[in-house]
Length: 206
Image 1: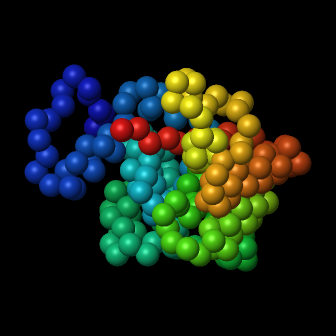
Image 2 (image 1 turned 90 degrees about the vertical axis):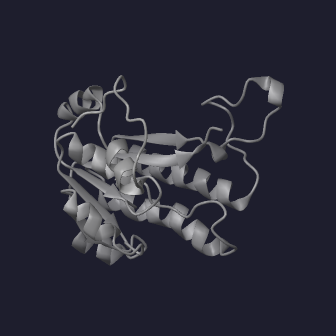
């Protein structure tokens, strides 16, 4: 079922109904993904956005394989019920990545340690810099879209108009700098191995 912006429900009875509605693709997405050859592998599919993105792609007619540690109880079963194949994998384990994940032509990278996740800075750097290196090496022949963050930009004055895509990446804080590292690692392997890819900087809006 497609999303119809002109026919929105007045209310949702429960969270499941809301999530099902959010996973309805628009016709434009169906057409876009129809032009993308091959299946989709979503890495880090157990996070805040991963399940919805995976359902969107599946409902748009693509075969989707979702990989994560799946520490959230019931998530893996829910995704499989929705027609998404799942693989439990620790992306920090290079051997597991190479042995268990299929070589699909399209990879969406959503893994990472988020801001406010705690005080374990070494783990933050491992997840945000080491894991991208593992993935970039393992999927050098795939197309990779890597989720990043607007936190890679430095603070700017309120009346400046905001950061630009070509602004220097000199942010404050370890989390933000580890995210710059993620981008640099993917860019390095893309240039070295001729891997096609895009960096997708996500910003929150209030």
